[in-house]
Length: 293
Image (cartoon, rainbow, N blue to C red; front, side, top):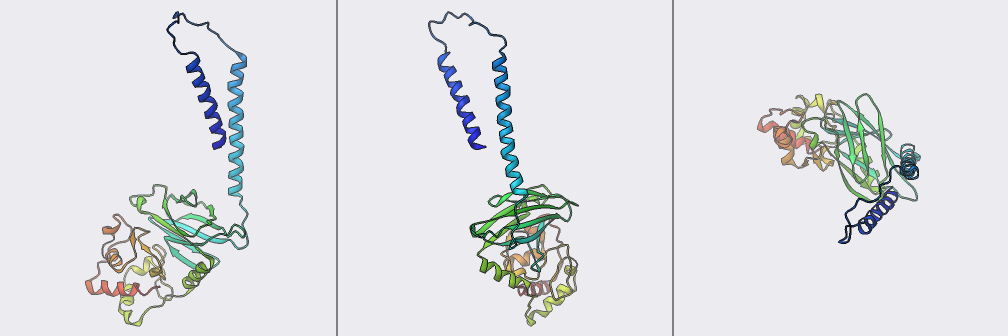
């Protein structure tokens, strides 16, 4: 498409430049109006047929690319992910691998000789969202009561940043996402770690007790405990993530403490409420969450 439009640009501006030079005003002009020509079937036919042919050619090229993307072949070793958009965070489930995580999507790098694309099913838990990672794929919307699909096939390892690209409320701008493209061995190791149940230190049992005796368990899941909420992110391996609050803040003890104490200080309008814990309870919960690796 760029090539076709570039040719059109060159032709049009060449004709324009020719007209400007050839028919420019001269000192010996007698200021009489040139002969007027009214109607030309050949010219009118040309400026109708030629643009139609160009548009048809661009339409066919676009249709071929769209069909190639939508009907992409799914190799047997492709990674399957279900991405669910929430106000205002991302939930990722790997159905065939029994892994659930949030906000940070991990995928293996794809080798051109042996492609390992990642196919993503897109769902919405509440309202319209949009999955957009510019360096990996175009945006695809997540619409309530509708299932959409997209896929990515990254060939370089690294961190790819994305964003919800559909206005979904006051925290739309901070509904960030991160895609970690890893070597296959590193990705397999991450999967194995995520498949394990939460391992906690017995010395922080008080923090676990506080966590399980408050409303935290209504929104969050920690495998191996009575916490099985689905409204908020799964926290089973919280400390394996680099960020909290959907990528807004680094996952450090200080930020985690502030996030629990007053979420609005980090993300104004966030759905998570301030838990109103005392100083001792807050430190115990932070210590407990710090063991969820």
